[in-house]
Amino acid sequence: MEPNDPLWKLLGKSPRREPDGWFTARTFARCLREGTSGRRWGIAWVGWGWLAAGALAIALMVNVTTSQNFFGENVVVNENSAKVQDALNYLADRTGEVDLWSE
Amino acid sequence: MNIEPADEELMARIAKGDDEAMRVLIARHQQAVYGTIVKMLGDPIEAEDLAQQVFVRVYRAAGSYRPTAAFRTWLFTILRRLVFNEHRRRGRAWLESLQKPIEASGEEFGRDLPDKAMKSAAQQMIDGELVDAVDRAILALPEQQRLAVILRRYDEFSYEEIAATLKTSVSATKSLLFRARETLRVSLASYLQGDEGSGQE
Image (tube, rainbow over all chains, first blue to last red; front, side, top):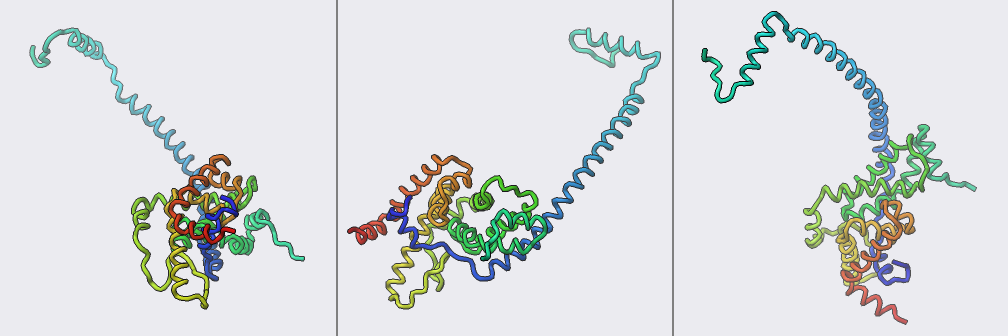
């Protein structure tokens, strides 16, 4: 599309619209209003990011330490553990239906 | 001799807190930004909102702005993203509205006709129809072709600048403009025939 193209000239008959005389002032005011808050939020994002990372690290540490105790308490090893295991093995080896309540 | 500061210098000043530099930047580029968006969307009210958003983003990014590319290319890249997002947000409902005739409300929608007090009413109506036809033809183009045409014809961007703004190659840009031109020549054929006939030597 070159200046000597008739289409070029035709497009020029619909000129680009110009903003009114107050556009600069309105836009400048909006920049100060929204741009500054955006900058503030940008700085806050950095701070909140570090805070969130620290909180997550602490939460992971707490979870790891408390979960070990939890699992530790649930693992019950006593003199009946071997018998329980034998019973389970017996049931696993049985074929057909198994009536757990039958004697 | 008062030499105006370059855009990059203004951005550096804005980054240091010189808000007045932002006002200068807006005044310098408002016509191009606003006028391009009006051509892209066809709605001057929406265009003002989007144009302001462009400058707000420029202002926010002043601290991190690095002049690795021409400022105008960077500015219009922001414009492109906002306009294309708006275009997608509107979707088909907006495209269908282009088919409806423009309501005569005393002021022609989307443009300011030149003040030609000496022109007859009939001539003004013809001019209005021509402007309307050109605007509709441009608005009917796919968004990439539309922006390429506007940047080339109204903002006088080079092929390289258009390619950088559209994040494409120069050859792809030329292809876009070629296809846009062919589409426009068809949609504006009746007006072109009149112009070509009158322009022949």
